[in-house]
Amino acid sequence: MSTVDATHRSAHPLSERRTSFVRQLGAQFARKRVSVVKPVNLGVMAELAAERHGRVPIYLDQPFTWDPQQRVELDYVECATLIEQFSAVLKQAGVAKRDRVVILKTPNYDIQSLAWAAARIGAVPALLSARLDPDIINILLERIGARFIITDEAVAARVGLDAARLKALNCTAIAAIDGGIPVADLWGGPVPPPNPGRDDEPMIITHTSSTTGVSKLAEASATGVSFSSLIESVVPFLHSPDDLFASVISHVHVRGAVTQHASFSRGTPLLGIGNHDDATILDMFSRYRPTIVESHPNAYVGWEKLIDHPSTPFASLRLFLNTFDAIHPRTIRRLLESSRRAYPAWYQCYGMTETQPVTVRFYTLGSVRRAGDRDTRSVGWTIPGVRARIADPDTGERRADQKEPGMIQVKTPARALSFVGTPDKYWGRRHGKWFDTGDWGRRGKAGQLEVLDRVADRIEGVESCLQLEDILMSRLPDAEEVVVVPDEQGVPTPVVCMRDGKKLDQQSWDTASAGLVGLGKPFEVGPDQLLHTATVKPRRYLITEMIKNHRLGNSGPARQEVILREGA
Image 1 (tube, rainbow, N blue to C red):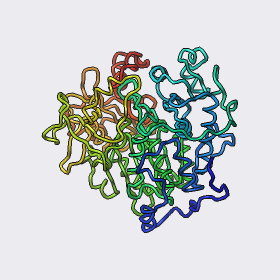
Image 2 (image 1 turned 90 degrees about the vertical axis):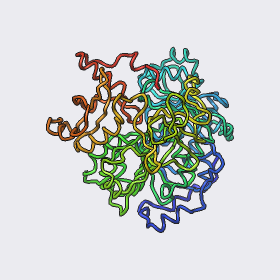
Image 3 (image 1 turned 30 degrees about the vertical axis):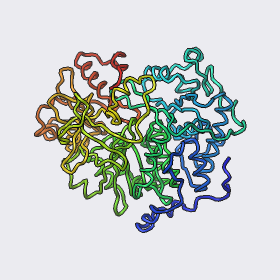
Image 4 (image 1 turned 120 degrees about the horizontal axis):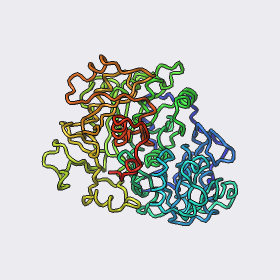
């Protein structure tokens, strides 16, 4: 158990978080941190951070579902204690070292803490999003072959996890559901000593986005996560004890593990948000006034409509961070303009589950205004310790001309160890130490990496669907989202969703599409019709199917064989 004095609270109240540049600079060189130069397992990070940093605050939009006190304000010590207590729950349930433990529950910031509790006793947590299609979830459950699953009543009902299904999976549910064991029945046992796995063994399993089909299950090690955490923890002005870091992401993603690991390393106060609706964002941001925020690109697009809210939710933010996917320049500009800080900035990070972070691009308000529609496909330069190259799609070898589009391959210490249940797919993407990302891109004039499209989403004759989307979004100020996909005949079709119930009129479309040759007629949809992943990425193959069904007069859901196709 942690031995930190429980009477000592954070030395940095929120009112003092508006720090000067000099103080921010000094924080970057602070020696008080949990070193991650050598790998640190997720299972012991919370205890180490509690010992090192003390009562650093963690503010929540909702309590950890398994916290007996149902608190919405914790600190590092209390979080570490909860993780220890839940590791005792897992031990009482019979979880042993190297057992796989699925975590499949209603979205909440507590998901990573559950994973850390499993890793603490050497089990391997497998995190699944409750937002996935139920049939996809059941396919992934069979591939994982876990002995235990942590879930809740609502998710179990949606997925069909009753006593019979649990028996078929040979799996014990730790939940108050049919055939499960309630957490309350297991609470209060002796806390076991930490017994994490080796640094090079699988430590956590997370899934890919399901943008191209059934998700892949990627194993990550302590070595890989710690490498990414180290890079993040030393990035200038990203973490400090004087900031409040708001995490508004899918917490089942490996990104959730990396960013919490880095935050605990540096002693960064946290604002953990599991419910991403507008009301929650307005409430939490106006109440706690975070200084740094990370979210999904398409979530940021949705926040554009909150900019003019009287509570000025983004006024205190000095730094925005996006991972998971490229982001539209229009959104960067609008949100930077909403900050009332003197020099707000934006970090755009390119990476994926299989590789973790690969590149970073830095924006200021001035640079994004100057860029306009130009250079929208650049995702910046590789982070230290990571290499990227453009490869020939036929041979898998490095292209002589790196400015010629090809497959983006990456060499990184954070590369996934394998894909659970589909190892052949993993090895098919390995080229020695290089890993095929599945993205199509090239090098820019200054050596920056440019991502043009997912290979699976490319349309013949179109250099970059993503660039077309950037241009159309900038020219349609009232658009919530624009996605360019092939229709049933392969014609690039813009799928347009307008904001606040507005309709796309012909004049606006003619102006927006001027000079963009070859585009089909726009296909307008409402916000509820666009299909997204847990990380708010558009599921392009299902949008193509939606267009096809509409033109055939079929308004029903996509066919199961389409939904359940294997992802690229």
